[in-house]
Image (cartoon, rainbow, N blue to C red):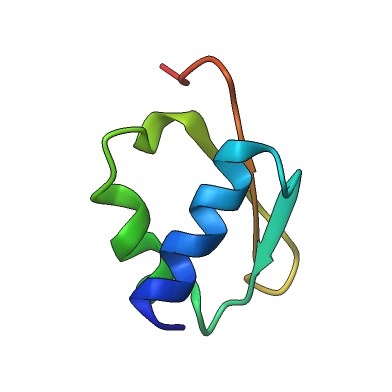
Length: 64
């Protein structure tokens, strides 16, 4: 996954265009690198799935 793709996905989650997005185990590290560099990082919730995939959602309230 490219950095541009990750930014697009995160922006779509934030805008509500996407409710959730599944990241594969292989894409996880490159996606997370972009995610943790964002100021609104704490608004994103990653839910681990069986097999190593992660389902990401955007929260209106930042997690603690």
